[in-house]
Structures are given as structure tokens and as C-alpha cells.
Image (tube, rainbow, N blue to C red):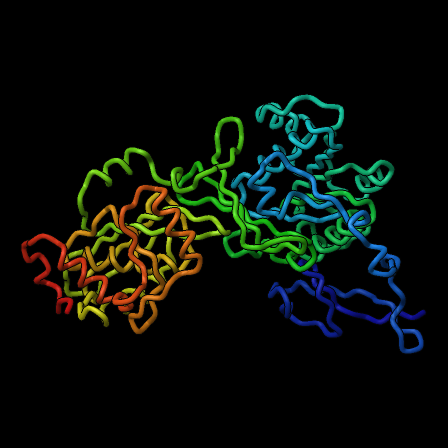
Length: 465
């Protein structure tokens, strides 16, 4: 069979019939190299081997034939996955370097091994002794069911594992794995997809749980998990908020269970420990005591945010600087700056204030990042309090999403948020209800209850009506 000439990109594997200076997929320059591909025979491409067809009636795939879930030793992590790791699943754990992926994976391996499961840890980044040193630091007991391997050629491990498949295979990391017949550079997207396809086939064929670690850059472009999300069964994103000791694990994709679930961990000397109550963890006890002792405080408002089905306390602190000649700066910690700018525009329109030439800063205390729009009302109460100079009662929590017209809408899971607020000791919960449907309604009620104050906002144009 004759071959035709094509041009293949080294980093991403894109094939084109003509040479070009820049790859149309990954954008790499001068990366297209001449290669040969088998020509079509009789108008058909040559057959590529794939998994054999497994066909049968629905009744034959009853509960007894379905894969089982296995506990990892982290109850909240298991709950986020839908009950634990599923047999034959390929799970991708992604995150920036140093976030704690290897620590968590090693702890899971150690706990499942201690429970009698057969576990392999394959590392392409460290030697066996280095992996063993980490396991020892994490307090993992020595077990004959926990095996360690180092190397980068994935087929050699899979060939060995196929003889007696383990219950769990941990691969650290996907960027370091190679194939003997691959012509791509190590870490390239094309090579990583080929390695992932090998692991996926192994997982389905042997019913082995495969946990793959992958590094992600700030842009998510370093041949990392962004290229693999459509191939794997479960995608876990590990994030580190500004509070250095905490880690947030988010379920971004789950073919066999719920998504958008989270588990919160605290980094300690002996590894990661699950956080049962994020509300109590993100804010120190000294801070809570100090705030609760005050009747009111300008620029500070509380809310109950929802993330992954879990309610937790969020305290918003706002600072509005003095008026100046140049347009003011906007800075946000824990909330998207675009969201902050939108809420500032709503505040200016609703209350008639002008913040265009003042600096505006907003920070969520505790170092967390919140995507929930149910904290909009608390952000605006803190901003309005700082801009107009009246205090917000610290015993009150604000729940609501604010529209561009200044309407306050009830957030999702309102009853769950209210219960959490009351359990944390808040005596008043402000949320949309009869008579309180506009942003100005909430401000008017607070200003009416606020004690007399000196006029410190003369530099601001306009006042609340």
C-alpha cells in the first residue's frame, strides 16, 4: 500500500496535507514536520484496532453485574464523588504544581492499601525511595499490598499490571509518561492523549480504578488536563485559596455521579485532613469573637455561600477610598473583578452615589474564592456601608442575588442557607420577601435603624433616597 505525504505537528499531533509556518491547532511555529501516512485502499482508511464490542440485553446488566464503589478513607471526598471510586473508572486529578495532588493521591493509596486493597503507585517524576519517603512522612504503614514503581514507559507498567491487576493504580503524573512507539515530544498533548487512551482501555478491561495526576498552568495549556477532560470519566480540580493551609477539591465532571461537589482539606504536617465545617475553618475564632462583640461595623457584611451543595459563612469587607482627580482603582480578592464592577454600577444607579473617582476594594475574609451570586447582596451592603458611612449590624446575614435593575432575587437553596445562618448564631437573616424586593429597601431599613452619625460622605456625589 502506498503512502501519502502529510505534515504532523510535534507538540499537538495535528496532521495537515500542506506545510504551514504555524500549527492551526496549538499555534506553535515551525512545528510541522513531514511524515507519511498510509493511503486509503478502495476508498477506505486502514482499520484501526479498538476494544471489542460488548453487546447484551439491559436485563443482563443488572445490579450484580454493575461495578462497585470503593471508599478512599476520606468520607467527604467519597460523598463528593457519589459514594467513592468506581471500579473501571479513570479519574483525573488536576491542579497547579505544589497544590497537594501527590499528597492526596498517596494518602488515598495508603488508606485503601490499609483496608486490604491492592494498590500500585507509578511515578515518572520520583524514584521509589522518594515515593517511600513521602509515604512514611504521611504515616502510611508498610504493607505488602502497596507497590511502588518508577519509570516513564507506560506500556511496561500496564503489561505487568495486566498479569495481576491492582484495585487502584495511581499515575504521577500524566505529563511524564511516554510510549516507546510515539514520535511526539514528552509532555506534548498528542502523546498525553495516547497515554490516556492506553490507561482508559486498561481501566475498562481490568476493572481497575485509575487515578491520574496532571499539572495545570495558570492558562491551563501545558499539555495538561484541559486536553483530557473529554476522555476521562471523572475530573477533579484541586485549588489553593489565599489561605495557604486550605485546599478545595471540586468535581468538575463525573460520568457516574454528581458534579460541582466540593471537599475542603487542611494541609497539616501529616498530610491533608478533611474539614468538616468550612464556615468555622475559614474564619478564626478570635475574629468571630471580635466581630460578634460589636453592634455594627461599616464596610463589613456577612452571607452564606453555597458551593458543591455545602453552605458556609462568607464575610465581605469593603473599603472606599477618598475622592481624587483620577478615576479610581478596583480590586477584588475572592470575587471576580468583573462581578465587582457590575455590582458597583448597580450601587451607583440604585443609590445615586458616584464612585467613579474613588478607589474601591473588596475582600472575602478567610482567603476563599466564591462564585456564588447569592452573596451579591452582602457585597453591596458592605460597599454601601463603606461609601455612605453607616454601620451594618454584625448579627445580621444577607442572602440574595442582585439584578442589573436593582432587584434582589432569592438565591438557590434559601432554606439551607437560613438554617446554616441560624446554626452559626445569626439572629437576623435578610433576604427578599414582601416589602423587601429592591436594593434600596434594604439600605433604607438599615439607615433608619442606624444611630446618628457625622457626615463623612460629603465627597461623594448623591445620597441614598
